[in-house]
Image 1 (spheres, rainbow over the protein chains, first blue to last red):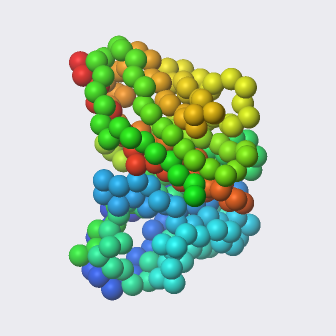
Image 2 (cartoon, helix red, strand yellow):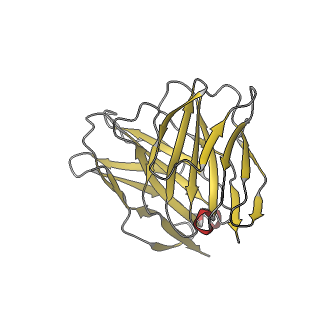
Length: 114
Length: 116
């Protein structure tokens, strides 16, 4: 069964450093998303991506964040200058066009900023 | 404003019994979708079940069913015949209002512990 994959599973970085989180969505899906979950809290929407551009973003998704689909399969989230409060689990998700709209999530990348 | 509320931070259930996890919501959208996801201790988010606001029948998916009461704005998840592997965090979610890409808004989650 096709699934969303994410790498790395855990990333440790120092404050101020840039990180890139990578995702491979399900191949016939057209909508891609990033969410984050700070430890013990609920899952929060960051950004959605469709037709090679950002279609929606939350207040959390400020200028230090960017997303890219550099080729036909990868979908990346870049955090330019990490802060301590960026420490969280980051989930990539994808969805096909039509249907009820369920999103399929990857296993997540745990980002720890020290 | 759109809101999803899960009032039970933690629940216990005996193995093989049924359990209901509560979810209430508020939205101004006349048409909306509700989802439940399971998050085991390993961290991944697993889609369980979907209910559309205009669906005539309550959704069912194996041991999962959704007790959808539109007038009360509730969409409770019922897990029948609980198994030890059902121990996890469960999140209720709905599509964001006026979202053109179907972003999901999540509740705070309920931790379910199944006792042997």
